[in-house]
Image (tube, rainbow, N blue to C red; front, side, top):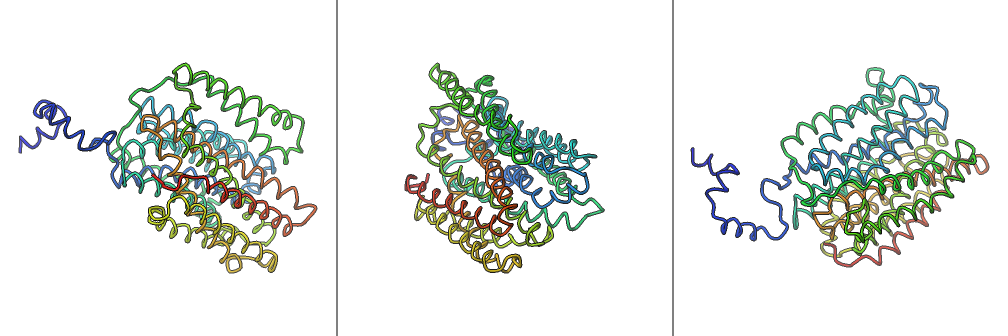
Length: 496
């Protein structure tokens, strides 16, 4: 008994096992393989996936709750847009920095800190006494999510290998897509349930028990990993990336509600200039041997570069559709929050089922699964267009079921696979940077989708009416799906 205990401790192992045996064990695990005590087990994977799901659910959960928030807090449309945009902007702006801090100080540590802060800020959102307090709490909530989420992919990349990594990446992508749809459904159910008279506040308060469970599990099941050669924070790059995202997303999200004042146009004009400055600073740091916030050399990885090119239009179309359909079904078709949310239930179900089949399909057909997913999604959008044309405003669960089901399956064959492709060649030492870049692209594109397709839809409603505005917006999304399908043909056939 004493001998068993002795040999299980790191100290005893190091003194009793010859160096040659240790080296042989290391070689047996394979180059770059995580040591057993740094491997991510099934319960640990569940825990980090929970951390990835909560912020995405929160991005979409407010869509169907916004009308109730506006009435309860006497908030204007522009302030309500800040409830969505403030969260999305803080989240997108700080994601890459969150990944770098995880590399530097330890990913498990940042994950725990970010999750704890996310729970506290969710509580603050749920207890907000007025609209501006809610906006402030949402901004800090987005920053908390930015500390937590990059650690998920970085931990998977550093603490798994081979088939286990491929499976974990597929589950991550499936979790991300399912969370987006489930968030909108859950929001409608919670608002209508009005638990203990909480109304819209429950969409934030529901996070608290999940965060507590996540923290308890993370302490026991998530291994600590970090970059072996961490670099200091790139201050100039961080500021310029934040400025670039703000100059693009802030005017697009607030411009229409504010009446497109001068600052919105000046901000959009500044975007290419700030982006150019950011690229120049990062390229210089890369050439000097330092590790910038977003290393341009990282984009030499073909899989990462082409995967991100597909992820952008995919996320733009997805988030824009979710926002527009929530507004159209409630304001145009007269559905309540529950019926508006449940109208998308077939999408969530088929997304889940197709995600389960995804890894086997990828093993057999490679990246062409993404192309097939784009075709399926396009068919689903066309079916939704036909339902809206034929039955508006009497459109609901039954009318949308065929289109939502087919579109959900198509999305499930794209998003998880593209995420896996993006990270497939990123070395473990740069896992935090790579995951930060990927999730930033995803989050910025989600915010851009709400800003662009949402603004287009709401701008067309006064002149065209709800039905035709919705049909026009769906046609634009269909064009985006076609672009995604064409871009997918450039992906490497084999998925690592």
